[in-house]
Image (cartoon, rainbow, N blue to C red; front, side, top):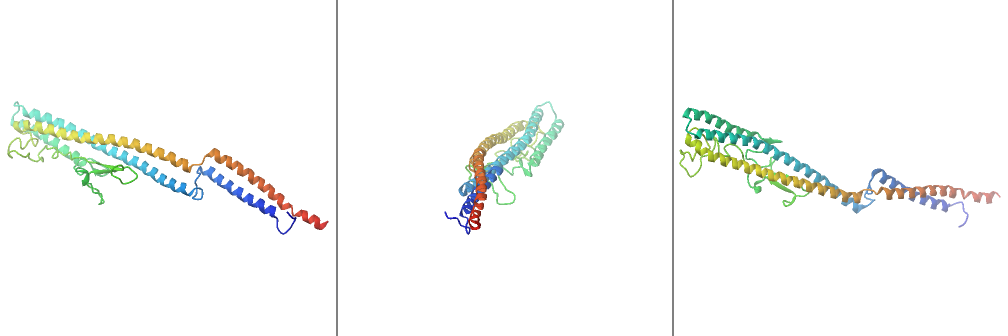
Length: 309
């Protein structure tokens, strides 16, 4: 290589190597400070796309867990109210059995019936008042077949839809909670209960459960109350099974989110040990390039010695 003063090729070469090493040093510093191997699309374009999809699924799964937990809280609210209804039904059967015996006169049965009707009214009040976040649970609004759910309006109707998956597939992303009405009339008790079909309107069988003001009505009410207890227990059993299912769903969603997070970490997160090795290497190269650039910049001065000599 000739000794020239117009172009310092050695300095240019050292500067290029310095820029390259310094650029890689900057990348290592960014990765180590952020903890991310993929910080920009330039680091790994395909990896960035996969990572963002994974992050979206992870966030969705975590929200799905919260949705399922909210549904469990809703179920527990309904079940707690039905526990109180259970106590009222037991008291109503006790009153019916009391009125069914022949040792009481008509006035006393009317007194017993007044408490019976009060219990029925309280059951209806509980059914009408039990709500979770403004959603009434026991008034029959959530009853019906799963196909009757309609979410097109501002307020959905029909069975409650619990969405926990990352998509919108009915086989894997959501299911419904249907809760039958638990008012006194829905259970067939109290004055608001409909007359039983297949019997003359003024018979005790037709009015079974509506009142216990006569001995015959009280006797007929025993079977009606038993049926009401069974109906209420079916609601509670259904709620319990759905709660167990939701708890299993939460376990599965948590495992999915954990494994997906691990996969996302392998794509996105920096291996600190490996990157620190690269950082040290580039740091040494940068220092060496700076030293050589300083030497290369001083070499043209040798030509001045020839000129001045």
